[in-house]
Image: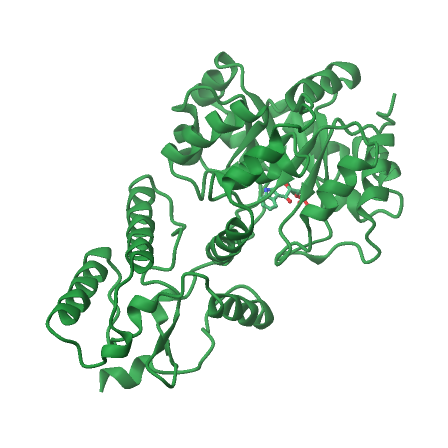
Length: 407
Ligand SMILES: O=P(O)(O)OC[C@@H](O)[C@@H](O)c1c[nH]c2ccccc12
């Protein structure tokens, strides 16, 4: 029977991440705030992957309710549930728009959270179609759960009130350009990064403020602070602590932004800039979010990884800062020739004409690497691993550039 195929307690099998991460992702989806009660009254043996069938299933449930349902106790579709249905529809629509722009990352699991609760015994239904296809997709799905929960605790109005008394932001792009002029090297955005899914723990004894101070002393123009907890062992507490520590460098909030609410949140926590990942965000989101960033005084670092993403970003007006990631976030493959490839020819010409500041990101370890991306056209570099691993991160910067760039 088909129902038997989907009823299981199995953890999904195929993934590039660890079993632990997988389980914690499952657990967090277990407590999914939008755990759709509208799915409860009906045991669905087949979950299809498009929103129209979600729609028809909801309609079926609504007519079931009208015509006198079997289980009267569970049979009201509240306004809240209707809103949740709508939210899922929007999510599915987002996936379709994104796919049409070549984005492979789906913003939501295609048929809702993978675990569905059915009837009094709360059987779990495992749906294979809801297994993330790669680590970036897993992070994004998890982020959706996380942000929904945070948003409930701190709605946008509350954040906006908080921002009324916030100190002004620092000029992130200005700091990069000034460092570039001062040192003759690309301005350094030094990353406060404890761990990553691809490299594991980079530094056991991790004191974010001490590292930030060492970076500043070593000549960093700006700092990047990982705030994702689950996959990078970062936190907003780290961002806040660094902001309050007296460090003057402008701060990039290194997050997986999927919702404009996160921009306000980052600003409230002391960020001067945020990351927007083109592999995740469709054009309209990038346009909308860069506008909000401007309103909030945040710089937006728009990250691309291939020609297609670069061309999408070049088609959007008002983008001043573009990062080229040498690491493919879907496969973890690194290749620093990627930076050069995306800055060649006509594309490079357009970037110069638009006056965009380009940041070479990831897998930069030696003075030769820095020279290579500078030659390719980068006015800044974003570096984590090679400097955060050094006992003295300031000395790590000198080693990376082959020269003391602190004064
Ligand atoms: O540690 P590295 O290889 O020097 O990389 C730093 C930074 O580029 C990398 O952390 C990064 C670039 N884009 C991201 C997006 C999300 C998380 C992390 C990243």
